Image 1 (cartoon, rainbow, N blue to C red):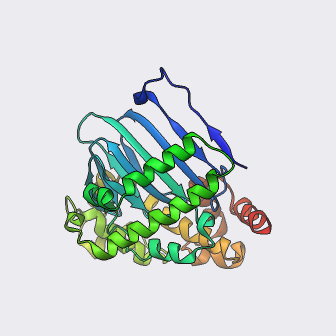
Image 2 (image 1 turned 60 degrees about the vertical axis):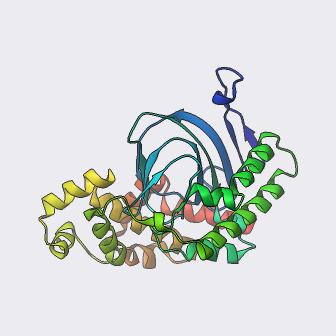
Length: 300
């Protein structure tokens, strides 16, 4: 069902204008889209993942955006994008007014165009997440976001179809940029130890690994590694490990694997109860509820 949410504003000035629109339903991790234009003072957000593809267009503000250990310095006009499996966070080096618009695309919204999903998934995690402002302007992506804003600000029966068309155009243009342009700006701001931890976990998270295993591989003490990782990512090593495992578990559930027989051991958990507690903690629902939700969506 299509719905529009208009948040109250202090006055009618453009600075306080907020638009939120989409056909994504809360707790539906597969279908729909969400467009949001909003304004706020700067704030920090610790590492997290989404269940969707996210495209953020920075209208005003300077911030540091970290994706899988790679840091990008963002400013007016830039776009930052992430996939569902990419861990990311952001912070602001200085106080500022933060104005942005973002588009969340859930996999089911473009399920009839598998080549688009392939284009988004071909990029290595933590690489080429930033589209610099000069390319955003050169390829007309800023104008495309203007069209999305206009479409969602005056929603009608054709809005969903128009948003699908804009989404296809957006992904095609970004893919063209990745193929034809040279991204010197991709170089990380800093080279952090946390990225090495993330890489090790990404390759071994479905095995029985411990902090001690990781510390031995990186030739540092476990205590020092834990403090370093927490200071650089805002989360513990255990949290990152669990988030990686639960992401795989959700994918396996959607593929139809048995929760009790196949999924929890394949995701690195010794027993079902530990897996169950982790799944609820990081998704807000039980594995069975997640499976039932996916089954009901498939039956539609």
